[in-house]
Image (cartoon, rainbow, N blue to C red; front, side, top):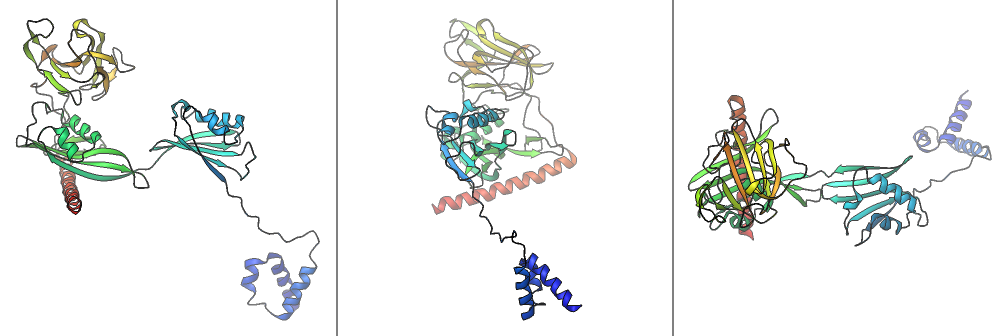
Length: 431
């Protein structure tokens, strides 16, 4: 009985081999067992053969660069991809990306199913990055090709800068390493209360902490949002903190937890010079004294003009001496008007809804003018008022538990800023 059991076990081991045989070899490892195993092996059917593992062929990869004056079809077929296959891949790509947007120098990664240089239809995947934040891929399926887009995951890192203004805010920011997009956001943020032509004096200062978004390689892809900013104008410091409330809404608040966003912006344009104020003046074209019922901002033609607040376009188009003109109705009391525009943003018409900060048009010189500028008016109860002096309706105020959460968040922001500033000073002194 014991002999039959031993033969059965040896037969199983001969068939299974590998790990099972190894695990049981300590218990059945005699000369008789070896003889039995050899006998069992000799009795295997002739059609049972020993197989060797077949090495997996690595996928062939290739990088192709779009040349000047070429197109994606030519780039793919130049690598040996059959024309019908290339056509199918490009047609699938159109579902997520317009091939006409491709520019010379764009790199494409091609993956083939096998290392076969002479095959025409083995393209499995085509992928490329049209911008640092997006990956576009076209992959072979049983039914042809499918296209998809994926966002590159970016990692935020905080950075800080500060400076004292001697000549202009722009020069002070540039000299202290503030990126232009961050400066523009800061100007827009403070434009609710600050007249950047009149309110800034030598000796004023600023602080700013902002996000920088990096890819997996640690390379900067773009700048993120401002987290904290401070401006000291004529000794008056205004600190602003980015805060997300319990409803998930993000806004900027001052030290008291009051929203700094007003119903209307005083200066709905960036980087412009106040060339004419509100009030009686000698008209530059007519030659006699006339009431100027708005303010003028001189700027290069094509400079974007923003909606000063949320509202509905009440009028758009040519309008007498105003030239190209837009009026936005914000509520029952307030409207704003924009004149002498070169053109309007696409898709706008009477009745269009706009949000504060939306581009509505571009600086021009239409109508009765001597040069390109924006004429800007604020109307209260259909009467023009001085945009520089009018008291804007304030935003919401945080209260109770929400205010407590904000104060804790603001204190954390200040601590972060202080630590980053100290780190930057140490790096600067080391250099």
